[in-house]
Image (tube, rainbow, N blue to C red; front, side, top):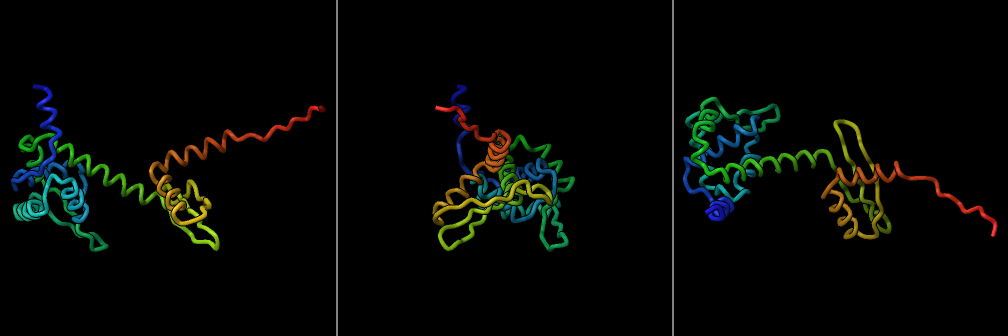
Length: 195
C-alpha cells in the first residue's frame, strides 16, 4: 500500500480544475509572502507542467475579479501580483484540496527560480575575444563589492564556454577552491644538498 501512495505522489500530470489551480496559485503566493512579477509567476506556474497555460490564465482572471490577488505597479512600470487577505485565507483554508505533491512541486520550482535569479545577479561570466583565443571573465559579486574578478585563458570559444559553464555549475565552490588553494600555497622548497 505504501508503494502505491509513493507512486501517486510522484505522478506528474496537470491539474484540470480552475478552482484547484486558483487555490494552488494563492498557496504559492502565500508561501512566497511577497509581491511577484506577473511574468515570474507565469514562468514558475506553467514551467512546472502542473498548470497548463489556459487554466493558469483563467485562474488569474478569477483571482483578480474576486479580489484574492491584486496588481501593483512599481516605479519601473513592472506589474506585480500581491495576495490579499481574502487570497491568504483561501490558501490557508483550502490548501488541502490540492494534493501536497503539487503544492511541494510548485513551491520548490519557485525557490529554484528565485535562487537562479539571485545567482544570475551575483555571478557574471563573459567571453572576451583575443587575437588568439578567449578570456573567460568571471566576476562574483556581493552587494556592491567584487569577491572575485578574474580572467582565464582558453584557446577557443568552445573551450571558453565549457569553462564558463563549469564555473556556473557551482560558483561558490569554485570561489572556495581558489581561496583554499591560495591559502594553502607555499613557497617552493629547493634541494640545496651537494651531491
